[in-house]
Length: 218
Image (cartoon, rainbow, N blue to C red; front, side, top):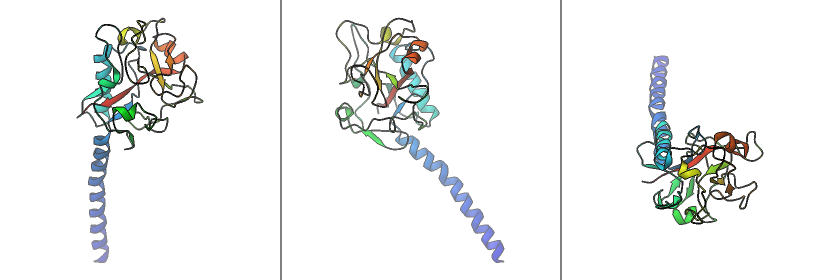
């Protein structure tokens, strides 16, 4: 009789565990509000414009179980009607796939107090993106932005034709997710230097892979 009772209790415990596991996964997904894309468009800096980049963010988030939010790519655009990346991403706070808060607000995100780093700037699945010293290095993250998250106003193209070009020429401003490397501001997560071309091969040759940041705007 004891054996039967123990088996029943064990079976009940296993059932409860099986029910609880998905609930925990769902809770983690609901907190996700910031990530680096685990893949870009595959066409270098041609993301289909801001709208195309936002769709990639939304699709990645949905695959991770966090598609119930409105996702926006952290990208600026140049020229008439230029858009500031900082104005697209909501008010915060933002959490990575492991539940770590990387910034509490837009001001915090663009301050020295943010928690962005190789360890915390994860993909939507919680994976670490390869950085300086890894093979291959993929720490160049597309932003088209200045350090304060605003668009450039110097008349030059810093966004590979507003994220529509995959040409061998051109340039896009990138940040270093691991906060190290070369360039004018190597420790900047959003404005380290310009890329040497807009194509996938050009981005890869200089330490990138066409990845970009996504934030939940609500």
